[in-house]
Image 1 (cartoon, rainbow over the protein chains, first blue to last red):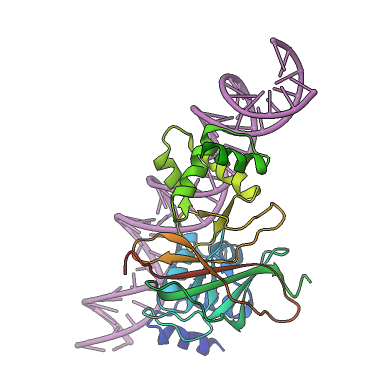
Image 2: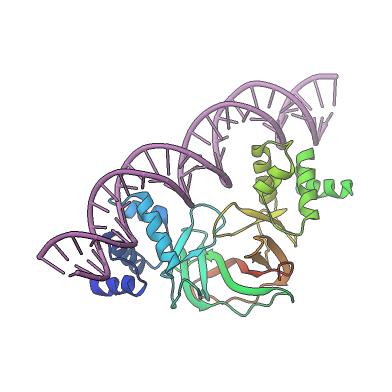
Length: 136
Length: 136
DNA sequence: AGACTCGTGCAATTGAGTTGCATTATTTAT
DNA sequence: ATAAATAATGCAACTCAATTGCACGAGTCT
């Protein structure tokens, strides 16, 4: 269990530290997207800045992706597929519940998108809001 | 021209003030989404807080919509269709250019989205990033 | 015109995001 | 196993967007 966490870090050329192991494990355990504030509440033993930099290093190495939102703190979700610093593939749908506020990464993939000629697509983010299965 | 601006405000039960007229006109003139900072730069004569509350009142009355983004200041776009405080219909695509940073509201509509059973959709936001027609 | 309601400006606060630097821990090579 | 190299951590401090309270001024209704 712990060793699989470590291999995630090793595979992404990141040093193995307590903070990083705890954060990855927390993301694996939770189904929902998490904000830096969530991590601060969960892990009082780590400094805000350490968690901030942990999230950033996970973003850069493609372990996490950042989910666009309208207000409040940024939220992060585990990448379902293999992401590299060069290429992020986020073809799953983000669902934001208007009741409980949680943001989930659904397994459903985003449909094909067409943009006018002259526009070149590099990434697509689909955020659906409504009522989640728990609150319904 | 000016009277059509006023009717927009009247239709949404908002009082007619210089600041609101200027802001609406600016949004109508610009094709891109705008941030509060953009308005502050354009309209030095109005206080930051006034512009902040102007944006908020426009949001509440359905004149503008807020565009989810990953970082930086929130951006706002004119609602293409008739939006009310109760129901916002944002079925157009937002395109964020990774070169110039501008966010546009495209006319293209978002494709149908499917979510797992138990989930109820209230709104959909599709943000595509890449290179815009100007930068391509 | 007068009363009422709402918008505005100023001052101040919060909170997320970010950086520099000294210290500590992890890794690599000996 | 240990030392050198390199990276992570904690602390302090800072920036900036977002937000609130309050007094004042402008818009609206009869």
